[in-house]
Amino acid sequence: MATEVLIEPKLSFHRPLEHKVALITGSSRGIGRAIAKELAERGASVAINYRNNFSCAEEVRNSIRENGGECELFQHDISDRLQARALVRDVLDRYQHVDILVNNAGITRDKSIRKMTDEDWAEVIETNLNGVFYCTSAVLPNMIEQKYGRVVNIASFVGQAGNFGQANYAASKGGIIAMTKVLALELARYNITANVISPGFTETDMLAGVPPNVQDQIKARIPMGRFGLPEETAKAVAFLVCDGDYITGQQINVNGGIYM
Image 1 (cartoon, rainbow, N blue to C red):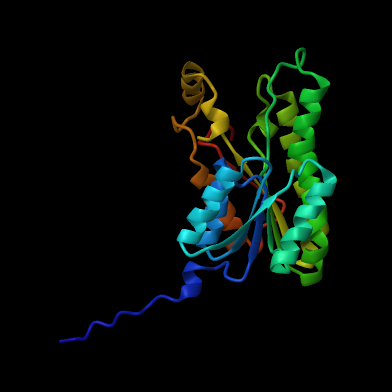
Image 2: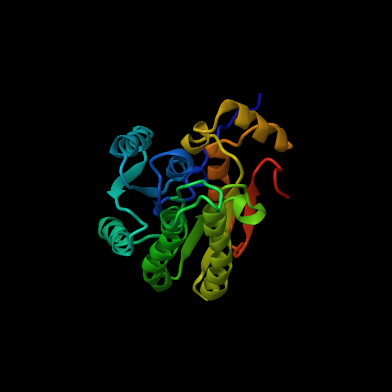
């Protein structure tokens, strides 16, 4: 009778991001929270960035640590250039290097253009677009020096298709898509990739504030008939940083078919 041999799988197969450091902006809730947990599960040391909500950030940290992961909290407002630079500096002080940057932080201030104020416009652009520039430019010297980096920017299908009442949001996300293409061109020589994930309507606090009847109308527009889960976007991010060595300047839509 043949003896059954059980082969223990290699740890590195399950933890391809071992010894990598991932900075995820806006990672105390929603999609950012799911990305932090996904990358930690794959072995990365995770820098959790948040602006105000310490209790949510702490919950993410506790969850990751309970599962054997490594993470730290960093409270900075990435819409402020000096704070964004301080964020990267603090993460480098803690971990000595940053291998993965996920620019996820984003806000909405939805109004039709004729009702939108200068402040509504500026707040969204400052966080969603300027924040990506501030964080990316701050982390690049380290990535260039180590000749390795993975930049993933979270945009939105709204940056491609537009959406009523979201001129500011659409402009910010469209800007991210364009900026990422330039980053890919400029940074490929340093073994740094830059890509975009564009989610569709996703089950987050942002969507929870939409009235149920409006949610039903939105679902009717989605070929898959449901909203996306934050974890589905997180898995797309994980694919790019774990297996996307030859993928750069690209956009992956995680939207249930609402925009093709």
